[in-house]
Image 1: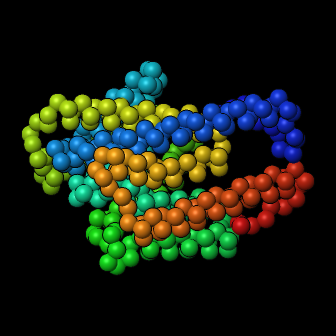
Image 2: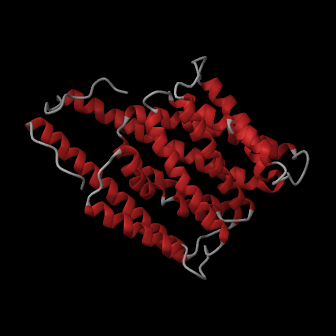
Image 3: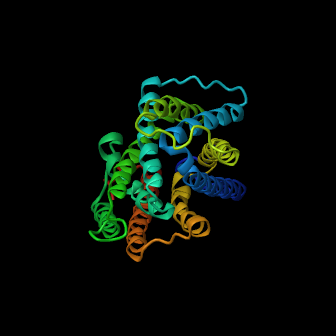
Length: 321
């Protein structure tokens, strides 16, 4: 984290403002690259799924991903401090991975999975109330309800996403939102490398346990498939390091909108590899969800600005907005 942040109520000097802006731009570059890497890794996994199956895919992803993070950590300790929360978050994220992999094994298009996943920031807004004690005002309540209306547009009866895999994935997205809230809590005690390492390593035993339920279609995948799996496992490790670097340089409010860039990558990759293109209702619903999420982000920025101004003037803080 930068040590050049200005004190509350003290305007930063021009040189300090330029340095902060430069760090923010670099952080945006890191996070944008991270989401691009994640999207490409997901596309590679979806491509390899017919030869692997969900259980074997989890095993190989966990092995190569944990190895990549261990190498990138450069000998730094990966021993967890908050062992209980890291274990719970890692296992819960394995459930999320199973939901994604089963959906891809059932031929759910890549962009459709990202459209459903766009509801995660809205779910985080709701989960932050009981778990982090955050206040949500009426504006964000209304925008969140509108966002869930967009989810209903995507999952309308008879529509392209009216299938059990989409419902399962939406449940997985809810768990993913919970793991992100837990990541905020873990960041107070453990490093990003530690969190990511144990998350990926947990995929190995969970994948082994799931082998009887999801036996691999072939005993030994072809060399091309194994090469892709090795690359995507390493890509996951690289992406987590990019995210860690980005959030160390730039504020969350500047980086959050780029989470929705995966939908663009999903559209491009799905069209290029499988000729997939989402239905109109899916795109319309995703647009509503993204608009609601961006509005919630705007309100958070406004509340943060008001808080800074109130602290600078010595005034009491207002409620949630």
